[in-house]
Length: 429
Image (cartoon, rainbow, N blue to C red):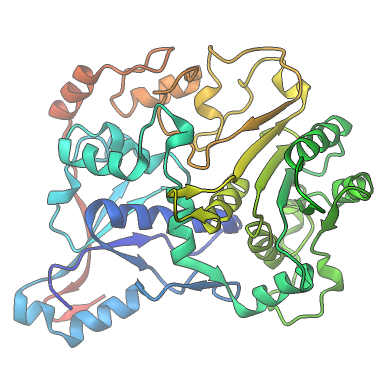
């Protein structure tokens, strides 16, 4: 191991939100690209019963072993130190003010990066090197459809279904073709006829020209799947993972905590991984609908991974693949102002420029959600204007920022460096 090795750390494995943990892995991969570091996973590989990981990642235990085996301290005087930058503490984070390329610590933990926003803060970093690297990674922030599918491409090389999960996916597909469409409905145990009618319209619009379309249905609400399936029979072949009928060997089959059932559905946690990898096999489009907020983290990741599988090598982009948001009209009475959430796909269009009282929509959706408000019709909600103030960013109601003020903020900001010793001298913690 060379003593100049740099690594980014993924957070410890805990909590109930399984797919958010995938986001942490993915954003560590992005940081790897930005600063030429490898990926480090602390503890065991998250959800290793359901996900297989690429062999270019390391656990902290493995790195400590290699550090000691190669005597990096004795031969090179290189102590294994981890630098911690906490995105969720605006007064301490260096995401906008620091030149991370010059940091000397072998491991950097960018803590609290569990959505599509934190890494895109580097686009406004005051250092030219950092902005150039971020722009090369994220593309043109003003044209959403032209931006690269960074999420999907990194997920495609980083993770794959475990053999048991792959067997479950194959069981659903049953030797047939991959599905053309994947439909994900986040209904929070509600049965909304408006949501059903809106997504039916999107499905019918999307499958025009497809012979014998196959559609995968995924939802946290079993009753909604039961409502949709008969309406799709006759013009589509419907696929759905009925986990109670599956007799494969997948461990961890117990149902999650009862208080989470309304939020994440009654199915065991492992079912979400089967649904995820099944839906990501969609060859034509992923459609996302919801009772309240359309385009969840889960749906974003499905669409991104599915799009990466359809990469057109001749043209350098997904060939005829779309990510589509299905909006019922009652969600649009006040424009997109209720489509909020820091990493939500429609958050950057939820401000004063969003149009009110629109009919049902089948909206083309970026597979890489915007992190700033640089594009046409993008505007911040008041809560985000206040939140950005804490990071030193003066944001107007139309999404522009005062760069001079940001530079002044960074100049006056006290530099904070937090580190954790891993291997110092001849002892590893």
